[in-house]
Image (tube, rainbow, N blue to C red; front, top):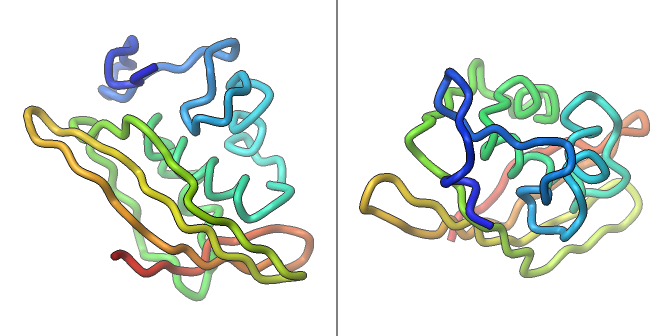
Length: 139
């Protein structure tokens, strides 16, 4: 399912209903996958945090992106463009060891007639029982 075709909210981002497939591509319903994490539940793994962050880009949830970004590396603001549609997430590899994790992914996007793929290897840390996005290498 391409979330670029879904109904849109007033701000132009797609509306994803609780029973819809999760935008992260897990195959689970939104309300059983990324929605609880977007609403503040801690992600159980670095990969699940990565998937929730992708979903936040899809639905325009800048609050979740800022809240899940490690305070040491978080930008002052997170600006999202509703014209940029994130259409598919591929997890290439995910590794986790104690309080560190990496997730390599490809996120497919389109904007108007343009389309492309963001390929990143993201780093995560776990502190005080929560996973945090630290930074990533785009390749």
